[in-house]
Length: 479
Image 1 (cartoon, rainbow, N blue to C red):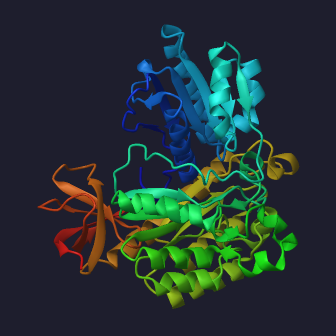
Image 2: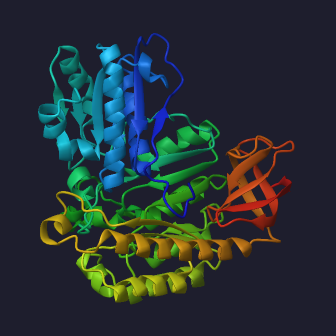
């Protein structure tokens, strides 16, 4: 599936190297955002200490966990189909236990455990440290649940295992939760309020990755620009902090600068940004350091001021344009990608045209585009009628996708004839004679293998492209 459409609900079963002495087998599958995949690494680390090795064979598992996403209806339907599959296997292997983690856990705990009786275990995103106790309950024949949201938990003291890692790139979580309360989004209700992780624990985790020869890390959060460490606690309580805490606080720009300076040979990315929280100092830090990738994922959701207000997005169309202009002025070669929701309640044809005209102004490199689906528990579900007909949503979405394809190809064609630095990540899906890697702009490049290896930084001369991929030939190791 092309990046410009959607890559965020794909499931992936995860496995790590077996730990000697562990007898039980864990099958863990993740859906949704990068944060869910990062959380699964934390879960596997916790359970490795409880006697579990991971397996990719569902039929062999003693414990099956699915890390879930509630942000769109399609993701929830996918997870439900997987639960049907797990329970079919469970009939053959009655000793197997099934659990749900993540965002669906908090929202559907009663339905899963009591009404439908399709799982044994339900664990919310802030309760993974309680898994050993919950598994004891399940082993004793009782259902177990913990979906309590935390004001402090960041898992900063847990060293995640790297599940099915390519050994090249890894996620490092720096914040949890979200305070923005967009009317379409369930994240504040399923993951709680914003709190940030101690920068020293972040540095320690990156140290471990560098020691293992990882070449790229992505600083991860629901809203990375809101990162603010002042000694612990919720971001909303920062005003109550002492003068010393405020004077020594570390915001995202300072953290990014600190990491880039300490690891000059490590490629750095971050995601996801919120336009209302991204500041000029972050952009200036990006421009200052060559090892910070020149790519920003900057969701807009709609190009209409009226719909942005209905969504409780705390910025205007013009403020977004001003931010885009500053990015392009300070980092001329920066790639920008978007999230867009079409068919939000009350969206008119004029609102839709405003979105298309915004896309024409920015000309995004990539995009993640979806038709609006009502999410239970959100303000939009409680207060607004889902009044845009499905056929209108589909038509508008098709127009947005077609325009993004056009812009993606336009952006990619501009690279033809250039020689770009590419980090080799894996073998190409379409040819075992080619490598696949990414440029600093996050663009995928494919080229013949020759004598290069995964993890090499190579210079690739770009000869051609598709709307999603650059095609070329390596001309040597990057300096």
